[in-house]
Image (tube, rainbow, N blue to C red; front, side, top):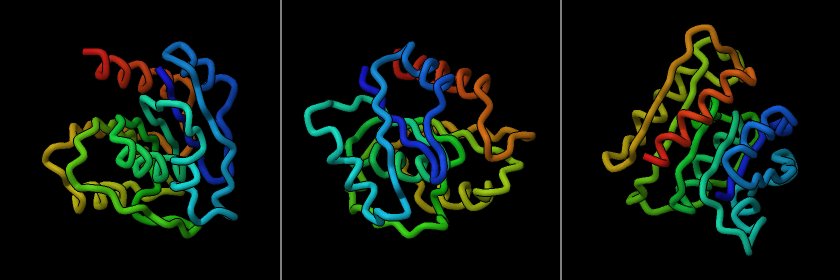
Length: 164
């Protein structure tokens, strides 16, 4: 299993979270500069030309990019506090067919002070697609940062859904 992990705006994949992901496959985690690359989604899509990415995981700005990369590749995605509706850095969004039906599991911190939970839910409602298998988990006391324990539990839950 080839896992593409997309970090947030001023973040990187931590060694602890990398270890969690390595239990499920080979981890590809490009070092992205969303500030300098307004076309980061297309950059990501061309980053590993010889690798078949099987699943996409992203957090915050990486959740935004992951949402669109997963749709472009027709792959399942696990997204943590994805910046789907608004971003502090402009990004080009590629046009993708509306017929995608890839599974998406989205974890939203209800106390997120960076990415508005209400705006994320609004985006998901506005872009509702009846053929997408969508799991949304609202976590009452969760802010923007994802603790390793929660990350691990959500990753395990996600891969269980893929292997049913």
